[in-house]
Image (cartoon, rainbow, N blue to C red):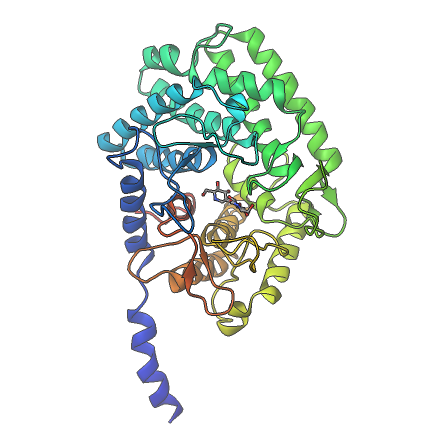
Length: 416
Ligand code: NOJ
Ligand code: NOJ
């Protein structure tokens, strides 16, 4: 009887899953669609096609920098000229918006689809944005230099003059001069000094210093290096916690949300991924990181019913345990997100690569399976999936969900 039941069940379970490769194709398609909307300034990316409940029809600097991180990775692998053209168009759009007047200069997190700065109330500045954008563009600059296109690099990306008139240098100058100031975190909720933001600023300045040096701007290289090493000291002195490993926020200004007591957040995990392979201050297998991952995993594992309901799949991960944003309002209950759940899978890939070990392979597969299980099984990914029912909710076809899936596939070397 039992066997019969298993036989009946098996095909549905097997057949209803899209393969990772099929999901990758859908994700690439959606990222391209969300990056080429006819009513949006060319090169700008909408966070989601959703225009109400929630309205995500804007371009966030962070989301877009990470989107193009995955496009640049993809270009590096496949050398697809169509993708390369999109990257150039994106750079033009970033150059345009860098010159728009905003409330907080380059720290402005969110833009209207015509490229002008958002004028409504918002958690600003968010100083991870310029740093993430610089890291993505520096990678592209390196690819272009390898291809022999130094002209474009010097003309558009990095030109050693002040005041800065090139995209990367503008972001580096902003970062070098503002990293000591508190800003809103990547979840746009808390003003303070954040691990995620500061590690990204560190990487931008470290990699920026190398590029500046190579391009003959050695005084700037020294200055960026000096700032990076001050950030390094701050990071090492301030974020290690004996209980949670790496904590998310050092100092809150104005008390923050008031209910975020654990200081446990997926943001440090994202920081490790988004600053890989550049930063070596916190290795994937180091003691504080391992402790942190363990804490994160066990906390979310017990928090979400959906983890107990499907214990054979990987662990569904949300933003932080006290989260009240359900994808529509902040008066609800937090849920697991796709981009944070796949992040744990990508973490295991890096941890395995760092130690040249295959011992994490099974955990990697389980995280991918968890994500595919809660997708609509036809390629769509929203922002979140319900912590009880497992059904998708929040902004539909979230660009960041898709680019996170793409990045995980590529960094796990799963894309053929
Ligand atoms: C929208 C933000 O993007 C999200 O991160 C936040 O949780 C809610 N607003 C509530 O502040
Ligand atoms: C809310 C998220 O908290 C934030 O990180 C993101 O930038 C925006 N949504 C847009 O996707």
